[in-house]
Image: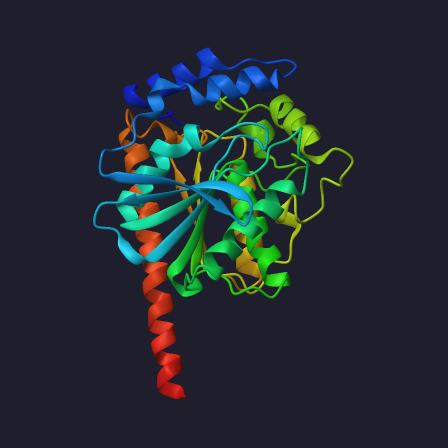
Length: 313
């Protein structure tokens, strides 16, 4: 069977990622600086208003595009293996998502490991979500999204909020989520030669920094092992050139088995969180649009459901 060649635009992204990959022991401070300084991330559009906030003591930013709905809100959790990533690294991506959704977005600058280990990011994310509710946000008009570690954190947050008795949002999007801290998916081996960004060695180091002495099978850290019943609609977006491919496929299958409306978009040849490369990659822009369409669909389904309940009362 003939293998389909990788398009030039995608190959250029893969080459860029490979040129920046550094194997071996992690220098966390250097990684943080480098991750925030990547020119391919793009710029924040001029019609986005960015306002610093303190969400129940958690640092964040509210990004509001011109003409955005005043009633719809998205909470975004950035990626970076729980050890790097910031408001700076993800501001362009989140701005594009805010524009596509025509909604305001709270991006959360949760605490990072190794200074702040598990479950600090989960606690911060929950506090930020509760801050939105306290500020008057309707959970039926609120959604969650996140990428990589932030994608896994998004799924863990939903189960955490459910168990705490908090009202859940209308839906959630997870981009290339890291849902299994045991790093046990078969794609760690089957897709290792395809992935120009992530390696087993890298993720095992990040997991150790994040978890410390905690159990990697703790469902709050590895939501693939969580009870996912009762969660709102979920969209998993994953590239076929990722060793984390199975983290999406297995988590989505588990959610479906537990009665959740869970969908997977597997994008051919795409690398880990290809949406970050949207300024130079058409597929990145398309992924953002599809995520926004799903979020809008969740808002509409929640609105229709509320109307039906009112009619029955």
